[in-house]
Length: 342
Image 1 (cartoon, rainbow, N blue to C red):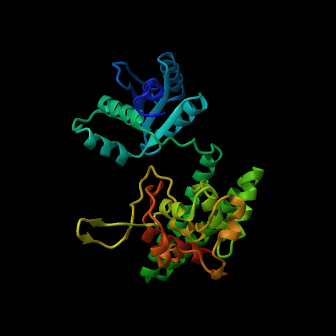
Image 2: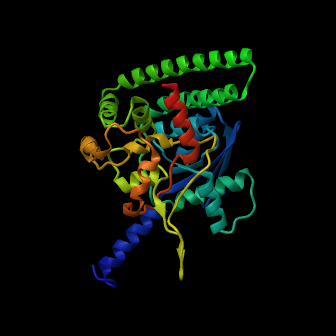
Image 3: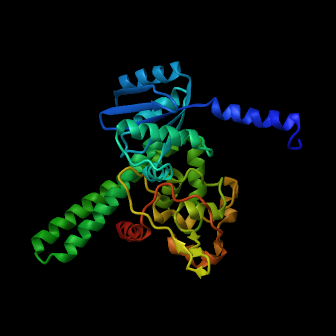
């Protein structure tokens, strides 16, 4: 339609009506309480962060016609209510704290308390335009197991450092026994995790396919499957960006800075996408093309994030930042400990 015609105005009005008719709510999460505010409304609610509170919250939201809900990641305290509301048919967007604070700066919002934060999250939710489908619910319990394996790996590395710094033979022997115990526990947990994945035929098939790539071991394949469900549905550039390995421009006016890798510190709330999976990220979609799209010129090589770095000039930038960031340098130490543990 040409601008100015009746049809063009009718179409534009329909889009505006559709946008304005979506009722959004924001939830500020606490360990014991949930504060809820509906966007552009005086309606407010506070409920317990418990199953009973979730039922009351769901009924309250449905009575007010809420369709979309925003909530800020808060150290895992938000996970139960997010799962409940999604299962109850609501669209739930989980924001990272940095997103909410950036929006507060954008709207010049300086005051902060639970109600104000809930209202701010509601405004963020109403402004959101890129809404992704919720993650596979089967991956959440698998991610918890993988987190335990990653923590055990870190513990082994830490104990090895203590043993190396100690000169008392009795203490060194004690640390050695602890290291051996944790290694056995780590291997047992990994075996149980693989068995749990094997209970789902589609996940087991994907795991076998990822593990068939040269240089990708079982541990790395499990990490890719659990931490990066987009695998097989994203481009090489997007995969590198998600892993935090894509270079970003640093230019302004006449200044031409170096293209940089975004490095992020780990957070308690994050389910980190570990750097040790990056060696298998060079792929094209669909998932069936995973093996063919991987660079086979590095056969029998150890997967490392630095494998991507020599190709940095050929990687396009992507607007998406790492979903679950972890400092790449720290993950390198984790991989070394993992290799020694094997």
